[in-house]
Length: 437
Image (cartoon, rainbow, N blue to C red; front, side, top):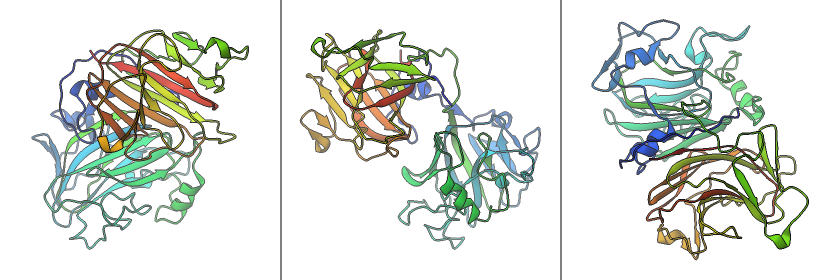
């Protein structure tokens, strides 16, 4: 789905929060998080295939959603449905506890699809007290697993009985990730970039206990589900953000139709009659030559920027590009700017161009380059996403939902946002920002 990102104004104050430790409240608000476990949780959730929240089993109290062993009540689901989303939650289990967080759960499937139970359609992030249930940490039924399909690594960090753990599910562009206490446990592609069920995913389903349920794991949208199962379990700080939906006050930086709002720059001695930047079917195409960039006409200082990119999906040829932040004047190759690198295998690096100042981990610094912590890119030719938080002196880079770099004490100056033409065919889409007040 081609989803634009909006611009909205929010105020800033610093806090630490879940998996995005160090982001300000303003940045979190700009990312679009919504609370699911607050005082109105009984209005956010309802019983599976029911109109109301269960009268027994589940209790909402003191910011927690709890279920007692043997309490009954059945599963609860969000009233809203989600396509691409990010969900974070804390969970605590008692001895022998067993539960799960399912997603893209259908209550009514297509003809021939079973929907008698949530697990007949929705993949599950397993919630389990491994030790008392005799489950190995790496088992496909263990805590954090993509239940009965993909197990976590054996070195996962699961806190003991009655201690809180932090879970996270990130589902975007057909790929789902399961995280536990800051560690990625599972990454599974379910759909390709055209929205078709991935062949390897279909094969895994065929080898699982879900093989006879035709609707399992192929729903393109659905509810989030908390499973009622044996043992005591509690959830708190349950929050979600819609990665496919639109929000009030939306303004696109790239309108999907033409280059309105952008200015192309190519050095005069390398001028060409062939357009470097063109638009077709909602995608911004760059030939890569000659060297130069496309920049916004407007300057921005503090914001959350999101943009998707891929190199040529037919040739699958790797290449180089970048997103330039707080770009100064005059137009030149290259202006004073922070570059968020898009060189294949290096997305997430910073480059400090033409004297731009920012502090990063000294161990990752080499000249103007500030290396990423780890690689989070997809295969060449697949869509990737940058989410970039430029918040006063702090600049944080997320690639495909994973934080890969962070800078502090960045010069706080208004500047353009630029997309580089740097020798390779590259495509962009869904470019927009949420401006911080």
